[in-house]
Image 1 (cartoon, helix red, strand yellow):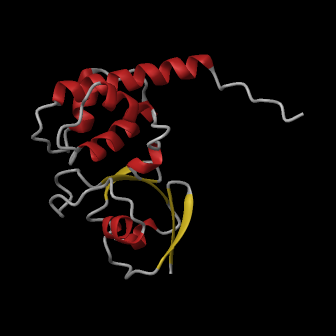
Image 2: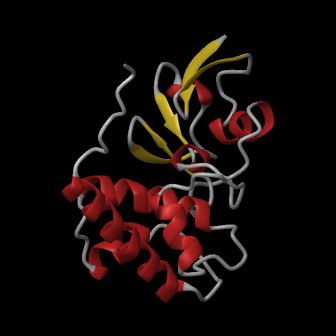
Length: 166
């Protein structure tokens, strides 16, 4: 058994250690946001975070994720409570076919964890490894800027006050 933590939940995986992480995520854990694109780690549609760093899950053997934290797009929010990037991509209508978008959102999330004030050049550089033919590139840039603004505002306000249990 291989132990990995996916989106905050510890998982025991019964898979060959060489099985690509993508296959485990989609096939065994039914997390379908990361997509199979090229299978060579060249298109970015399978991007996930492994211990906070972007990884192309189609070329990462599940064994290399053992005892690590894996975050997929599903870990950034839910349908009922989407995260800042998800809300921004919805508001800006940044997804067209949706195939490349989960990987781009993962990479944008990694960028925004490092800086909440990215320039357009930094955003473009971060997204450079991702292939997209949709033609929504300007909407994607707007969505990432929108998410950064929301995250800056939220961090300036500080954490929400906790309700008393008394």
